Image (tube, rainbow, N blue to C red):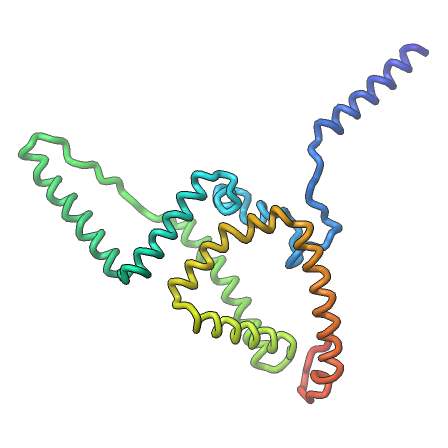
Length: 233
């Protein structure tokens, strides 16, 4: 009798210990997530060093990356230096320094510099090319669906997106637009991760309202347009 009580109490303590040892899952899969996200934001970014940099897990590396990007943007934007000119000048200086040192090392009795052999692995190139091929084929499928007039909703979404990008492109040049996107990678994911529940709740309400307004627009306008093969939601 005492042994059974002791065994049950020990099993209860072991289960309690296992529950305390198992970390709680902070990501709630049954809650609405922005863009249909099914994983934590850190895992969405790959879960490795790039994710640590973008989410400021490693503040030193994140600061260096953001500072270097800002310095390059200021260098090209304010000094009006061109990328091709900069690359050529850096290559000229590097090759000239290596050439002079390799020849001067014979006279000053110094060992020549060891220049490592650099080669891009074939597997890396194949993986990148395969990923690009998949994304390009998906884009072609979307463009084909739009061009054949089968999906009016997708057509309006793409037209609206391109119109919005054209307006943004009219405000900023390509370099500044690229820099704004670069800065966004270091700010928006961090803010979203910090205020994840509030943003997802607001996004859910906004999505419900958008669907409601689209249903009204579809009933009053889109359904009246005679397009063959038009998809209906």
